[in-house]
Image (cartoon, rainbow, N blue to C red; front, side, top):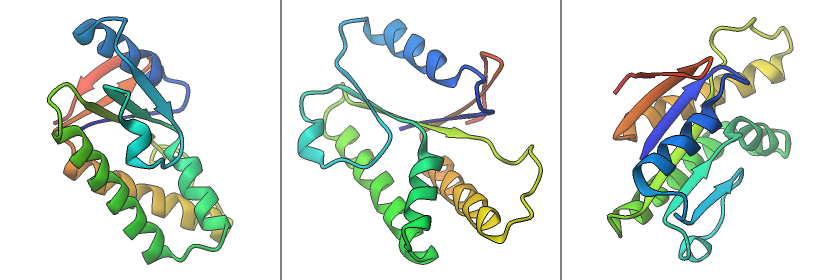
Length: 144
């Protein structure tokens, strides 16, 4: 699994697409998602790009999911994607996260909670990822 992190509108998604095409060609079956989907729906694809993960976190939080439940669901989702990736050497998973640490801390308690949850999810993802890349203004920097 490859975790790509960077600021909003800094070219992460374009960089990921270009990297996938460079290493596997344009004809590679790529699925771009912004929510969890069952593994059976992944079968026709060779690469999965999960972006807008902060929106997934925020939606679950606002729908009443408790902190520990949300973090457990996140860890399970990441672990399941890694298992899918390991089933076939042609499979590749890329998680795209938006860095929120360089912004202003929200005064609103709920927004701070969502920001904290996103940070904890990012930390877990970075630990589990084989590779971590930060993209700022379209320029990639290998972190792991």
